[in-house]
Length: 85
View 1 (cartoon, helix red, strand yellow):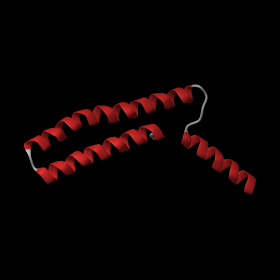
View 2 (cartoon, rainbow, N blue to C red):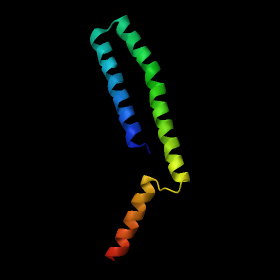
View 3 (cartoon, helix red, strand yellow):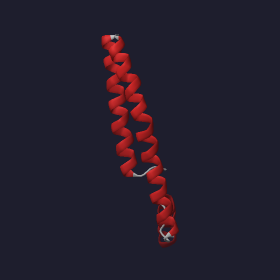
View 4 (cartoon, rainbow, N blue to C red):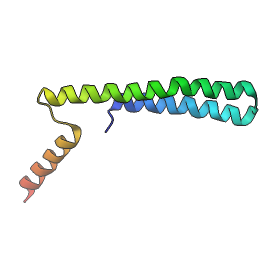
């Protein structure tokens, strides 16, 4: 699972990449194709580093004794079921 920060970074990178691809579709020029190519060179490392940073932050949180979001949701569901019946 990705965190909120990496989700925002990946979403923004995807919007920028789609924008470059739409420009390529409209212009159909060599310069537009080069912009898409160089955008992808930037896009891939940015997205992968955002996901990697999120993973390392999450693993530090777990190592410090914290719960992941999935574990927290499971605990809340269990507590709710126990209280209700």
